[in-house]
Image: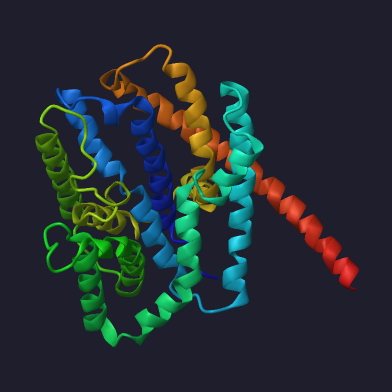
Length: 343
Protein backbone atom coordinates (compact mmCIF):
# COMPACT_ATOMS: atom_id res chain seq x y z
CA UNK A 1 0.00 0.00 0.00
CA UNK A 2 1.36 3.38 -1.02
CA UNK A 3 2.11 5.69 1.91
CA UNK A 4 0.32 9.03 1.73
CA UNK A 5 2.67 11.99 1.51
CA UNK A 6 1.42 14.43 4.13
CA UNK A 7 3.64 17.21 2.84
CA UNK A 8 1.67 17.31 -0.40
CA UNK A 9 -1.58 17.58 1.57
CA UNK A 10 -0.07 20.53 3.44
CA UNK A 11 0.87 22.18 0.14
CA UNK A 12 -2.69 21.80 -1.15
CA UNK A 13 -4.00 23.39 2.04
CA UNK A 14 -1.53 26.27 1.66
CA UNK A 15 -2.54 26.72 -1.99
CA UNK A 16 -6.26 26.92 -1.12
CA UNK A 17 -5.57 29.31 1.76
CA UNK A 18 -3.47 31.55 -0.50
CA UNK A 19 -6.25 31.57 -3.14
CA UNK A 20 -8.59 33.07 -0.55
CA UNK A 21 -5.90 35.56 0.49
CA UNK A 22 -5.42 36.65 -3.13
CA UNK A 23 -9.18 37.15 -3.48
CA UNK A 24 -9.06 39.27 -0.31
CA UNK A 25 -6.98 41.84 -2.21
CA UNK A 26 -9.52 41.97 -5.03
CA UNK A 27 -12.41 42.40 -2.59
CA UNK A 28 -10.91 44.99 -0.25
CA UNK A 29 -10.07 47.53 -2.97
CA UNK A 30 -6.29 47.16 -2.66
CA UNK A 31 -5.65 47.52 -6.40
CA UNK A 32 -7.35 50.91 -6.62
CA UNK A 33 -5.74 52.31 -3.45
CA UNK A 34 -2.57 54.40 -3.36
CA UNK A 35 0.51 52.59 -2.05
CA UNK A 36 1.73 54.49 0.97
CA UNK A 37 2.47 53.69 4.60
CA UNK A 38 3.62 50.58 6.47
CA UNK A 39 0.33 48.73 6.22
CA UNK A 40 0.16 49.02 2.45
CA UNK A 41 3.77 47.88 2.10
CA UNK A 42 3.09 44.79 4.20
CA UNK A 43 -0.02 44.13 2.13
CA UNK A 44 2.01 44.49 -1.07
CA UNK A 45 4.65 42.03 0.13
CA UNK A 46 1.96 39.61 1.30
CA UNK A 47 0.23 39.88 -2.05
CA UNK A 48 3.38 38.68 -3.79
CA UNK A 49 3.62 35.74 -1.40
CA UNK A 50 -0.03 34.72 -1.78
CA UNK A 51 0.11 34.90 -5.59
CA UNK A 52 1.99 31.57 -5.65
CA UNK A 53 -1.33 29.77 -5.00
CA UNK A 54 -2.01 28.83 -8.62
CA UNK A 55 1.62 27.93 -9.39
CA UNK A 56 1.58 25.59 -6.37
CA UNK A 57 -1.48 23.82 -7.80
CA UNK A 58 0.27 23.50 -11.16
CA UNK A 59 3.38 21.99 -9.57
CA UNK A 60 1.24 19.59 -7.57
CA UNK A 61 -0.45 18.55 -10.82
CA UNK A 62 2.94 17.68 -12.28
CA UNK A 63 3.88 15.75 -9.14
CA UNK A 64 0.65 13.71 -9.13
CA UNK A 65 0.09 13.27 -12.88
CA UNK A 66 3.61 12.42 -14.03
CA UNK A 67 2.72 8.81 -14.87
CA UNK A 68 -0.57 9.46 -16.66
CA UNK A 69 -0.83 8.01 -20.15
CA UNK A 70 -3.27 8.29 -23.04
CA UNK A 71 -6.09 6.30 -21.50
CA UNK A 72 -9.82 6.41 -20.99
CA UNK A 73 -9.34 6.57 -17.20
CA UNK A 74 -7.24 9.74 -17.45
CA UNK A 75 -9.75 11.65 -19.56
CA UNK A 76 -12.76 10.30 -17.66
CA UNK A 77 -11.26 11.71 -14.45
CA UNK A 78 -12.24 15.15 -15.77
CA UNK A 79 -15.95 14.38 -15.52
CA UNK A 80 -16.29 14.71 -11.70
CA UNK A 81 -14.32 17.96 -11.83
CA UNK A 82 -16.47 19.42 -14.60
CA UNK A 83 -19.67 18.39 -12.79
CA UNK A 84 -18.39 20.06 -9.62
CA UNK A 85 -17.55 23.19 -11.59
CA UNK A 86 -21.04 23.42 -13.11
CA UNK A 87 -23.00 22.58 -9.95
CA UNK A 88 -20.99 24.81 -7.62
CA UNK A 89 -21.13 27.64 -10.17
CA UNK A 90 -24.94 27.34 -10.23
CA UNK A 91 -24.95 27.34 -6.42
CA UNK A 92 -22.84 30.50 -6.42
CA UNK A 93 -25.10 32.28 -8.91
CA UNK A 94 -28.26 31.42 -6.97
CA UNK A 95 -26.72 32.52 -3.67
CA UNK A 96 -25.31 35.75 -5.12
CA UNK A 97 -28.67 36.57 -6.72
CA UNK A 98 -30.39 36.11 -3.36
CA UNK A 99 -28.08 38.74 -1.81
CA UNK A 100 -27.52 41.22 -4.63
CA UNK A 101 -30.61 40.82 -6.79
CA UNK A 102 -30.60 39.24 -10.23
CA UNK A 103 -26.98 39.68 -11.28
CA UNK A 104 -26.99 36.35 -13.08
CA UNK A 105 -29.81 35.86 -15.55
CA UNK A 106 -30.17 32.42 -17.14
CA UNK A 107 -28.39 33.44 -20.37
CA UNK A 108 -25.68 35.39 -18.57
CA UNK A 109 -25.12 32.51 -16.16
CA UNK A 110 -24.74 29.98 -18.98
CA UNK A 111 -22.22 32.24 -20.75
CA UNK A 112 -20.22 32.71 -17.55
CA UNK A 113 -20.04 28.97 -16.99
CA UNK A 114 -19.20 28.22 -20.62
CA UNK A 115 -16.35 30.74 -20.84
CA UNK A 116 -15.03 29.97 -17.33
CA UNK A 117 -15.69 33.45 -15.98
CA UNK A 118 -16.92 31.82 -12.78
CA UNK A 119 -13.56 30.09 -12.26
CA UNK A 120 -10.87 30.71 -14.88
CA UNK A 121 -8.63 28.01 -13.41
CA UNK A 122 -11.07 25.31 -14.54
CA UNK A 123 -10.52 26.20 -18.19
CA UNK A 124 -6.74 26.23 -17.77
CA UNK A 125 -6.74 22.91 -15.87
CA UNK A 126 -9.03 21.24 -18.41
CA UNK A 127 -6.68 22.27 -21.21
CA UNK A 128 -3.64 21.09 -19.27
CA UNK A 129 -5.26 17.71 -18.58
CA UNK A 130 -5.82 17.17 -22.29
CA UNK A 131 -2.11 17.37 -23.04
CA UNK A 132 -0.67 15.83 -19.85
CA UNK A 133 -0.08 12.36 -21.41
CA UNK A 134 1.89 14.01 -24.22
CA UNK A 135 3.86 16.20 -21.81
CA UNK A 136 4.76 13.05 -19.88
CA UNK A 137 5.94 11.40 -23.10
CA UNK A 138 8.10 14.44 -23.78
CA UNK A 139 9.60 14.30 -20.27
CA UNK A 140 10.32 10.57 -20.48
CA UNK A 141 11.92 11.01 -23.92
CA UNK A 142 14.62 13.20 -22.37
CA UNK A 143 17.88 11.42 -21.65
CA UNK A 144 18.35 11.80 -17.90
CA UNK A 145 18.77 14.70 -15.52
CA UNK A 146 21.01 16.78 -17.77
CA UNK A 147 18.37 17.04 -20.51
CA UNK A 148 15.63 17.61 -17.92
CA UNK A 149 17.67 20.53 -16.56
CA UNK A 150 18.09 21.97 -20.06
CA UNK A 151 14.34 21.61 -20.74
CA UNK A 152 13.39 23.42 -17.53
CA UNK A 153 16.00 26.16 -17.94
CA UNK A 154 14.91 26.74 -21.55
CA UNK A 155 11.23 27.01 -20.56
CA UNK A 156 12.05 29.36 -17.70
CA UNK A 157 14.12 31.52 -20.05
CA UNK A 158 11.50 31.89 -22.76
CA UNK A 159 8.40 32.16 -20.53
CA UNK A 160 9.55 33.83 -17.30
CA UNK A 161 12.38 36.19 -18.20
CA UNK A 162 10.44 38.75 -20.27
CA UNK A 163 10.97 41.74 -20.37
CA UNK A 164 14.58 41.13 -19.26
CA UNK A 165 15.26 39.15 -22.44
CA UNK A 166 12.45 40.52 -24.60
CA UNK A 167 14.63 40.75 -27.70
CA UNK A 168 15.60 37.07 -27.47
CA UNK A 169 12.41 35.54 -26.07
CA UNK A 170 9.41 37.63 -27.23
CA UNK A 171 6.44 38.11 -24.93
CA UNK A 172 4.18 35.60 -26.67
CA UNK A 173 6.18 32.75 -25.07
CA UNK A 174 5.05 33.86 -21.60
CA UNK A 175 1.90 31.78 -21.90
CA UNK A 176 4.05 28.63 -21.66
CA UNK A 177 4.56 29.26 -17.94
CA UNK A 178 2.17 26.42 -16.85
CA UNK A 179 4.65 23.97 -18.40
CA UNK A 180 7.43 25.29 -16.15
CA UNK A 181 5.39 24.51 -13.05
CA UNK A 182 4.10 21.20 -14.39
CA UNK A 183 7.57 19.93 -15.31
CA UNK A 184 8.92 21.44 -12.08
CA UNK A 185 6.54 19.21 -10.12
CA UNK A 186 7.69 16.15 -12.06
CA UNK A 187 11.33 17.12 -11.54
CA UNK A 188 10.92 17.34 -7.76
CA UNK A 189 9.08 14.01 -7.65
CA UNK A 190 11.74 12.27 -9.73
CA UNK A 191 14.92 13.71 -8.22
CA UNK A 192 13.65 14.74 -4.74
CA UNK A 193 16.18 17.58 -4.23
CA UNK A 194 17.23 18.25 -0.65
CA UNK A 195 17.95 21.90 0.11
CA UNK A 196 18.26 23.47 3.55
CA UNK A 197 14.75 24.58 4.49
CA UNK A 198 15.91 27.63 6.42
CA UNK A 199 17.84 28.78 3.34
CA UNK A 200 14.75 28.23 1.19
CA UNK A 201 12.62 30.26 3.62
CA UNK A 202 15.16 33.12 3.58
CA UNK A 203 15.24 33.11 -0.25
CA UNK A 204 11.42 33.18 -0.39
CA UNK A 205 11.18 36.07 2.11
CA UNK A 206 13.90 38.10 0.39
CA UNK A 207 12.30 37.51 -3.02
CA UNK A 208 8.90 38.65 -1.78
CA UNK A 209 10.42 41.78 -0.24
CA UNK A 210 12.24 42.59 -3.50
CA UNK A 211 8.96 42.19 -5.43
CA UNK A 212 7.21 44.49 -2.96
CA UNK A 213 9.93 47.14 -3.24
CA UNK A 214 9.84 47.00 -7.05
CA UNK A 215 6.02 47.38 -7.06
CA UNK A 216 6.31 50.15 -4.48
CA UNK A 217 8.94 52.02 -6.45
CA UNK A 218 7.12 51.91 -9.78
CA UNK A 219 3.80 52.90 -8.18
CA UNK A 220 5.34 56.20 -6.94
CA UNK A 221 2.59 56.64 -4.39
CA UNK A 222 -0.14 55.67 -6.82
CA UNK A 223 -2.03 52.37 -7.22
CA UNK A 224 -0.43 48.98 -7.81
CA UNK A 225 0.73 48.60 -11.43
CA UNK A 226 -0.14 45.18 -12.83
CA UNK A 227 2.32 45.38 -15.71
CA UNK A 228 5.30 45.58 -13.34
CA UNK A 229 6.56 42.04 -12.71
CA UNK A 230 3.16 40.66 -13.66
CA UNK A 231 2.16 41.31 -17.27
CA UNK A 232 0.62 37.82 -17.70
CA UNK A 233 -2.03 36.28 -15.44
CA UNK A 234 -1.31 38.46 -12.39
CA UNK A 235 2.38 37.55 -12.33
CA UNK A 236 2.37 33.76 -12.49
CA UNK A 237 4.84 33.94 -15.38
CA UNK A 238 7.27 36.08 -13.39
CA UNK A 239 10.63 34.48 -12.55
CA UNK A 240 10.52 35.73 -8.95
CA UNK A 241 7.09 34.16 -8.43
CA UNK A 242 8.45 30.92 -9.86
CA UNK A 243 11.39 31.07 -7.43
CA UNK A 244 9.12 31.66 -4.41
CA UNK A 245 6.83 28.83 -5.53
CA UNK A 246 9.76 26.41 -5.82
CA UNK A 247 11.05 27.41 -2.38
CA UNK A 248 7.69 26.88 -0.66
CA UNK A 249 7.15 23.58 -2.49
CA UNK A 250 10.60 22.28 -1.47
CA UNK A 251 10.07 23.36 2.14
CA UNK A 252 6.87 21.38 2.59
CA UNK A 253 6.67 18.54 0.04
CA UNK A 254 8.56 16.00 2.17
CA UNK A 255 7.33 17.14 5.58
CA UNK A 256 5.97 14.35 7.76
CA UNK A 257 3.34 14.75 10.50
CA UNK A 258 2.82 12.10 13.16
CA UNK A 259 -0.29 13.63 14.71
CA UNK A 260 -3.25 11.57 13.44
CA UNK A 261 -5.79 14.39 13.83
CA UNK A 262 -3.67 16.80 11.78
CA UNK A 263 -3.07 14.12 9.15
CA UNK A 264 -6.82 13.61 8.77
CA UNK A 265 -7.48 17.35 8.63
CA UNK A 266 -4.89 17.98 5.91
CA UNK A 267 -6.09 14.90 3.99
CA UNK A 268 -9.68 16.17 4.10
CA UNK A 269 -8.66 19.59 2.80
CA UNK A 270 -6.45 18.04 0.14
CA UNK A 271 -9.18 15.69 -1.10
CA UNK A 272 -11.62 18.53 -1.66
CA UNK A 273 -9.20 21.36 -2.52
CA UNK A 274 -10.66 21.83 -6.01
CA UNK A 275 -14.21 22.16 -4.65
CA UNK A 276 -12.97 24.54 -1.95
CA UNK A 277 -11.42 26.73 -4.64
CA UNK A 278 -14.83 26.90 -6.35
CA UNK A 279 -16.78 27.62 -3.17
CA UNK A 280 -14.53 30.34 -1.77
CA UNK A 281 -15.55 33.13 -4.15
CA UNK A 282 -19.18 32.57 -3.20
CA UNK A 283 -18.56 33.13 0.48
CA UNK A 284 -16.13 35.98 -0.18
CA UNK A 285 -18.91 37.82 -2.00
CA UNK A 286 -21.27 37.47 0.97
CA UNK A 287 -18.65 38.32 3.60
CA UNK A 288 -17.55 41.50 1.84
CA UNK A 289 -21.15 42.42 1.02
CA UNK A 290 -21.63 43.05 4.74
CA UNK A 291 -18.09 44.10 5.70
CA UNK A 292 -17.94 46.92 3.16
CA UNK A 293 -20.82 48.62 4.97
CA UNK A 294 -18.42 49.35 7.83
CA UNK A 295 -14.92 49.34 6.30
CA UNK A 296 -14.18 51.59 3.33
CA UNK A 297 -10.45 52.01 2.74
CA UNK A 298 -8.05 49.23 1.69
CA UNK A 299 -5.60 50.08 4.49
CA UNK A 300 -8.45 49.72 7.02
CA UNK A 301 -8.98 46.14 5.87
CA UNK A 302 -5.44 45.31 7.03
CA UNK A 303 -6.42 43.30 10.13
CA UNK A 304 -9.60 41.89 8.62
CA UNK A 305 -7.65 39.33 6.60
CA UNK A 306 -7.29 37.35 9.84
CA UNK A 307 -11.08 37.10 10.12
CA UNK A 308 -12.38 37.00 6.55
CA UNK A 309 -9.90 34.43 5.19
CA UNK A 310 -10.44 31.82 7.95
CA UNK A 311 -14.22 32.33 7.71
CA UNK A 312 -14.24 31.78 3.95
CA UNK A 313 -11.83 28.84 4.28
CA UNK A 314 -13.94 27.04 6.89
CA UNK A 315 -17.23 27.66 5.05
CA UNK A 316 -15.70 26.39 1.79
CA UNK A 317 -14.26 23.34 3.57
CA UNK A 318 -17.57 22.40 5.16
CA UNK A 319 -19.46 22.96 1.90
CA UNK A 320 -16.93 20.89 -0.05
CA UNK A 321 -17.09 17.95 2.37
CA UNK A 322 -20.89 17.97 2.14
CA UNK A 323 -20.77 18.21 -1.65
CA UNK A 324 -18.30 15.33 -1.93
CA UNK A 325 -20.48 13.14 0.31
CA UNK A 326 -23.62 13.90 -1.70
CA UNK A 327 -21.80 13.37 -5.00
CA UNK A 328 -20.43 10.04 -3.81
CA UNK A 329 -23.86 8.79 -2.74
CA UNK A 330 -25.71 10.00 -5.87
CA UNK A 331 -23.04 8.88 -8.36
CA UNK A 332 -22.79 5.52 -6.62
CA UNK A 333 -26.55 5.08 -6.87
CA UNK A 334 -26.56 5.98 -10.59
CA UNK A 335 -23.68 3.61 -11.35
CA UNK A 336 -25.39 0.75 -9.51
CA UNK A 337 -28.58 1.34 -11.50
CA UNK A 338 -26.65 1.35 -14.78
CA UNK A 339 -24.87 -1.87 -13.83
CA UNK A 340 -28.17 -3.58 -12.94
CA UNK A 341 -29.69 -2.46 -16.23
CA UNK A 342 -26.70 -3.83 -18.13
CA UNK A 343 -26.97 -7.28 -16.48
